Image (cartoon, rainbow, N blue to C red; front, side, top):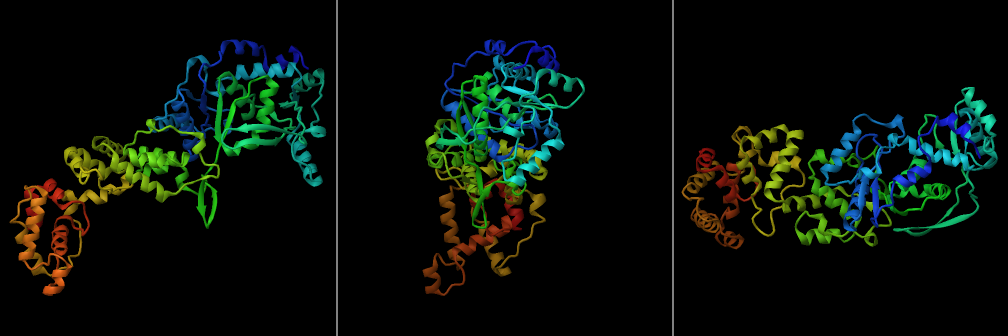
Length: 528
């Protein structure tokens, strides 16, 4: 146990003790309080968005609280501007956090007084100690442990300063020796404890016996210590995070118990996996571009599609709900722990594209056009200029095939749109090329005849008249007639000629709708 003399040497005069913070941070009333606690170290990982989405959705579905905490104690890894980007991305995906000022501040770098009060409490109670091991000493200990086949770390006989006397510690501090504060662990690695994970069930883990660093020589707490202090004073009831943190549970279990804090519920989500050479591996920031959310956004996957796909990974029954509801409102779906994967959700870009195609087909046309305009403004200037030049025309183009109960599923991503719609615009159409596979005389005859039919009539009548017209020109109505009369072409060939002339492609959406968007003058110009 250490006195205020040592504590003041380390922290200076503390404004408050731990008991003070117990009083000013009241216990939350909600049954579920969860958080997303990223570090501002760069782009938002797809796995991080997945974790944030699950935390948010479970809180929403259970009338709980979802808050955002920024874990910025590792100053060396902090990337300037990434915090603002992170908040923008969460907002973009509709993940709303409720940072009640009662439990502020929400950035760890602004919570030093709270951490220091808890550290002071641990030093006073003999639960922690200052450690003056140098990097060279730690390296030497590691080498010795590896050579003898022992676990590496500071524990037991390797914890040289575990019982350092107060006066000796003060002397070393006054002499300017660098130091950290370590947990004085009471654990026994040969003993196990049981803890329930809400997804994986009861876990049996070895006790922690490492005297881990809880206060670094840069005067900031470590992640493990800050996690325990913040989750306690912020009232976190459920810690929902990736399965890679299961190995840290012994440390967190001991820290909560050592500090006298109530342990939260834990739920460790299985990692998002990738199939490679017949094997599964964790989605990698280094290997996989789709590991970055910004990559998916830049490709033009709408945010609703990304959310829909991640919810498909999160709950095995979400896809059925999504396909039957035919809308992109996720709030009516209740996320459940029982339906979560325990073996690792497989990220499949082809499946995501399929979900995205459905998502786009369900979208309200005005919402869709706005989404495309916003995306193109940032990522495709040619498409953006077409949209803002005539928004009504672009809306009509994007409305093709969307009036039925089973709308046309044309696009997987927004980056596919420009090449598929540019034929509507003369500045692009006139420079497009497509080889006409039919005889010039036949083409001329079809063009001349086609212009006699008005496309202002209802589509079914227009189609019927075209079939009669093509038949009069010697095009077979079907395969049977083609064989019986030994004809060279069918109605499909007739329509293909017109399509190539008007679209410069043999594949397009409804020709009838295309004609009505182009208008009579432009149709005649293209057929001239």
